[in-house]
Length: 93
Image (tube, rainbow, N blue to C red; front, top):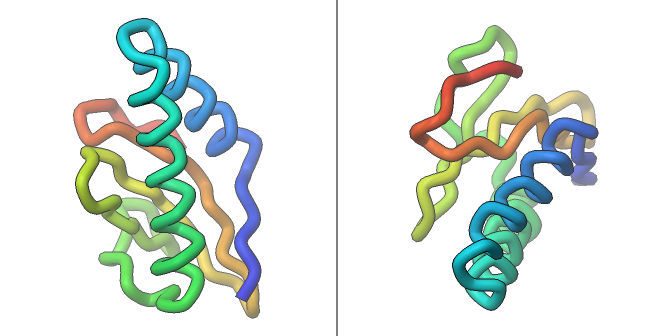
């Protein structure tokens, strides 16, 4: 299984890092690293683990430890990460 991040999801990760970095640079690195680790160690091996998505043909992976949700699609042997969203944000996929 391969993982591909959309442009929007990469921008989300950068925004998360910048926002947290304003208060604590070390925490910002840890949060983003944790999100990526969850995708690369759990989601990649269990692509059906996420709940049914709010958007048709998507699934939502809830990141443990932090309040982030990763909407994604599985097509053939690829997991497409659509966004990385804080649970308090409005959804625009």
